[in-house]
Each structure stands twice: as C-alpha cells, then as structure tokens.
Amino acid sequence: MKRTAIIFVLLACITMSGCLVSALHPFYTAKDKVYDAKLAGNWMDDDSCIWIIQPNKSSNEFMSPEKLDSTFNIVYYEGDEKAILIGTLFELDGKRYVDFTPDPDEDHCMSDMTSFHHVPVHTLARIEIRDDQVLLFWFGEEWLNDLFEENRIRIAHETVDIGTGYSRHILTAPTEELQMFILKYANAKDISKEIDEAFTNGTKSTDDHPFVILSQYSGPIPEK
Image 1 (cartoon, helix red, strand yellow):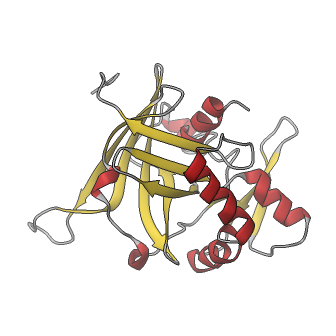
Image 2 (tube, rainbow, N blue to C red):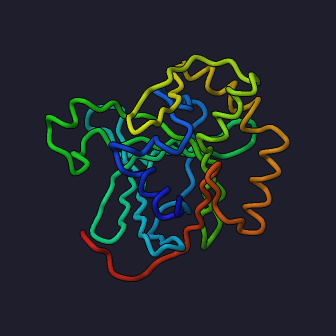
C-alpha cells in the first residue's frame, strides 16, 4: 500500500482503522497528558499533504479563562480531500505518543445517517517533536496480527469482518490494560529499535508501521 493511501486511510473516519492498531478506549489517562507548543503549526509531509495542527483551548469552570491542554485539533488535506482529527499528546514510561481519534463534532464528509452507523476508534503513534519537524511512527495492524497469531499476546478484542475478505482486530480493553500493552509490546526492544532507526535515519514507511515526517510549511492553505 502506498504511504499516501495509508495516511489517508488513517485520517478518514470510515476507514481510518483499517491498517492501524485500533482501540475503542483512549490509550491515555488525564495524568499522562503533556503539552508541547512545538507541535502546533502548519506542516507538510513527503507526499505534499498538508497538516494544520492547533492546540485545543479548554476551560474547566464557567467564566474562567481558557487554557491550552495536550489536545490538538488536526485538519489534514490531501488534494481536495479533508479530514479532521483530535490528537492527544501523552507520555508513558518516558516516551511520547499521540492518540488519534475523529473529531466528534465534525461530519467527516458523511451524511448524518451514515455517521450513526460508525463508532470512532483510537489509533496510536510514537512521536518525536523537533524544532522544524514532527516524526510520527504508527503501530500497524499487521504487527498486532502477528502478536495474536504467535500467541504472544492476550488482550480483550473483537475481530470484525469489514467485507472484501478482510477482517481486523479492534482492542476493547480499558485504558489501563491498553497501557500495559504499550509498556510490554509497543516498548519492546525489537520495535523500540525500529522506532529509533526510523527517527534517526528517516526509514521509509512499511505496511507494519506507517512512518511520516512532517516539515514546516508556509504555503497556502486549501481552506480556511
């Protein structure tokens, strides 16, 4: 699968979980959330897709001033197509991740009737934020499939048939168990080595793990 296709599959609400580790519950808790102002900005990936990332402003009390938290609003453009996500930056065992999920307040280019029949899921990526780049390494579904097939992992999940002879695993475990999964498997030596090499050498994306490099972008935005 081409990397462009992988990324748009990631960001489209209907099919975003088709190539990635997907979960019904968030991968983070409130205490894990961190904020990094360097993530905000206009970015472009190697396929000329534009990412507009802005921090979310929240207020916990009526009439209290808004404050920045670790949740970012993401608008992604691939040509004439647009997708809208919420990305939550969090830290676990000294490593930073982003939890991606569709923005529930957006229609995602679907009719109301269609959207009633879709349940948003969460996907997980390791992240490294630099002064002029953002590196994203997603945990791919093929990697998860191998863990299940080799009987290396036990975690609550459902196997969903999505047609055309293809099925996928959806993790249904609560956040606490998802974090145990991250610590034991997503931080294992073999995949940690692969992530380090990707972040250091700019390794190309694979079907197992889509990898994206975002560079600062100062050109026109398709839509304000």
